[in-house]
Length: 312
Ligand SMILES: [Mn+2]
Image 1 (tube, rainbow, N blue to C red):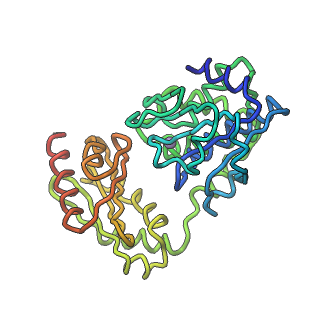
Image 2: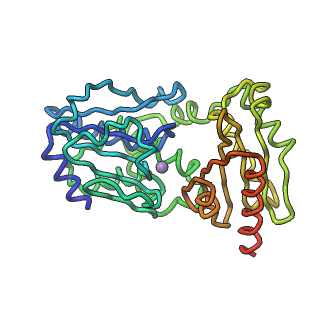
């Protein structure tokens, strides 16, 4: 599969790279790391990255603004995006050929070629391996290494999550040979605003813990307004419950205008089945879902309790 992708990259003059909406460092790292390598390795090609980029990720890269006509005869690559509804910029279908590169479960197979590997820590890790297997066809530049490294540490929590493997450390060991500042990435990625520090404080003071080991907390619109954060920012507070004794799986509920966003995490019990029951999905230990009432939110907690009980 990697060989075919490298062939296509070699063949096409125009390559447009997409990734998922509400991007995280892995989405940007894989998308832009790949773009950066193609640009350097093939200076004559037109290579573009597209999608909305939140202010918090501007330190990584900048997106391109392109016309619909650019897609004529283009190769489109979508990184880190499990399902088509989550592809940022719906024009991904306008190209001549479509490639999916991802590490999420392949619940929505799309594209002419798919390179999906759920054992990879991140899509950025897959992009590194694509370059490594290419015999210098894709040159790993300093800029690309910085982006790919940022993606890997983003998705592994700085090599903390169980998705971290020998492959991850191999990639990291090659990437840090390049010239970029890891500290600079950390400073940007882990800086907390005062608002978020206070919200994390609220979460730590007020979360509920069931006897089965399910941590849960509701973030209402009023609460988020009080702490002056939006639901996307507030969702980051999910990581603050990960180190508490007795918590096996946990969930935060974020009330938005017409739905309640659900962020699920686990230390062991597999939770993406629960997410799938509530309009969502994701990784075994990190998933997202959507519910439409607080009663339904309570059902999510009930299902998590069952999953935690079975784990014993
Ligand atoms: Mn990812």
